[in-house]
Image (cartoon, rainbow, N blue to C red):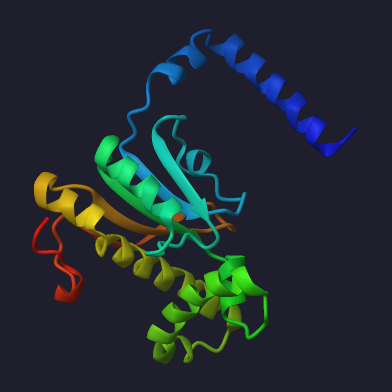
Length: 211
């Protein structure tokens, strides 16, 4: 049996089990999506947003990419952000990284990962450069990578705050609250490392005055 066939069979078994437990499960999901949260997470399959927060489908709107980045030229991310903030009216945006992140570790090397990955990882290298003085004092490479995961999450939250999407919602609706979290693969615990309340002032060069 091909591996993808197993996924389809498991899907049918899962759907049947859900209906047996709750006959209206799928009809409710089809009609309602009013999440309070936008989750920007890593593509790593070991960090499923619903499972690690013990929430139900429909409670969290999710975007994932390598190393949970908020890049100002990423139209995919920005489309998700605008839809979540403007149309779904989410109250919280969470950037959640995880310790042991392969993307973060890759960014700490000088290895050539070829064109597109090099371009993507350069954004994390920029975070390292901003915090080089602190990071270079950490001798253990795994501990240094974990600290970079935390600092990367913080910088991505700051990148959210730099967008006109967030600043407009802050000005007119006093939401959403921004959170930076890091998930522990070894213990399953989320570590909150940074947050910004709606309306927080950032460097004036990034603030829009005519929203």
